[in-house]
Length: 116
Image (tube, rainbow, N blue to C red):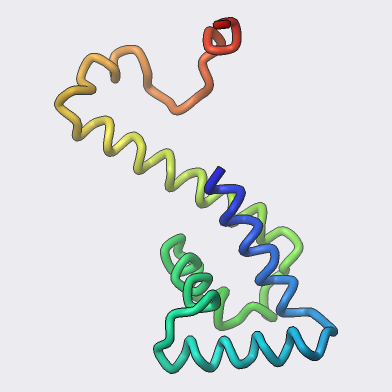
């Protein structure tokens, strides 16, 4: 669920970049100025999220990228990093040693769908 939330945040942020609404443009511009001055706001969190998923250049150069496919690329990166973090935590855990024998990927197990 949090992956979908992140993607929606990015989609809204991209929409703000090209909005014709003068009020939204003004508010967003002020939020960017506040972010650049060190205040923590919504724009700061978007920037932090993009940096965390290795898209730091996108925040500064959003008009230089093709914004249509970017949410899909972003979602794939978030999913991949989630899987890597999951696998790393499983491998580091002393309790999960046997688990790695039976489970090698983060996939939905079919037997879960037949349980009442």
